View 1 (cartoon, helix red, strand yellow):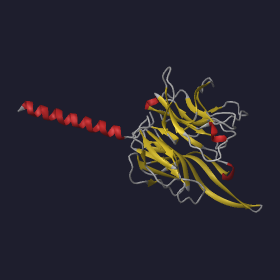
View 2 (cartoon, one colour):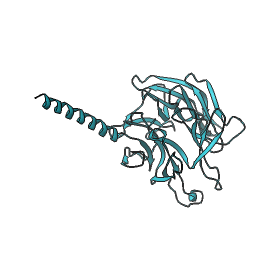
View 3 (tube, helix red, strand yellow):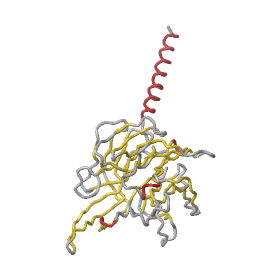
View 4 (tube, one colour):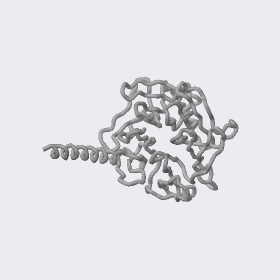
Amino acid sequence: MARTKLLLILTIIALFFWASAALAAEQAKLAFVRGGNIWSADSDGGKARQLTHSHKDRGPAVSPDGKWVAFYSGVGEETGFGQIFLIPSQGGIIQQFRHPEIQGGEHPAFSPDGKNLLFVGLSDLKVKKERGSELSFATMSLSLADLASGAVRRITSNPNTLLDTGYVYSNPAFSPDGRLIAYQESGSDVSGGFEVLNLQGKKIFRFPKNSRDATPYWRPQFTPDGKEILCYSPATDSGKEDVVFLVNPASGRKTILALGSQPTYVDHGKAIVYERWPKERWTATSPVKADLWRLDLTPGAKPQKIVAGGEEPAGQMP
């Protein structure tokens, strides 16, 4: 009888761990954009699943537990700015993030504990007529939303931003310990490095250090140990290619990792996934698509294409 009970207990435990493993296997390790829709997948591109169908969705972010994907969309936009939504990583009901003081939101990023959502916010929108044309001005901010209460706190903001000339904040990301934030300074293809702030909005670091260096370094993301920053420099003419860099803030040294753009870590920092555009994008007479490539960060590893027609990859935070 005792042996039967023991076997029953062991069976229940085994089933519990099997169910836990199955659940973990169903969690998203990677999210990306394809055809203006959000998809989730394993970190090698396998088990890809389409989550949205609006053809206007961008900027996915995967929650630390892999159960949710946040993104922004232009569906029903009234401000010319996006709105932030969340959806289960295996598909389901889409939930819109709303706050009375925030008229629009883009570029969401989860905090390491998954309790907060960092995003680029838009508020105080004003349209002014000047010399026969309409110009849009607004307060842009890096804001932090408590997902449980919905409370929002601005970390830093820039009032009276002229939206028609580009944004002043893009692609924010947390450090692994949740104490710092890196963000891209602009959305221009001719300039804009990245800055690192603390949660009180105090500037800690900027790259490039020389403020007169206009080279763009975009989409900063901390390494799993928080000591370096992954980013990329977009090509600005047909004679160049996008380059993925690893930047050391202490020394200012940058190391080339791959030719591509929009890099993100996967598998707890053991690999990166990034976009790779065909060279013909500069001369093609019809639209071309990017593919997603994966590079394992081990000596001698070679890049492998894992998703055809994919853009803006986002990995599960280590």
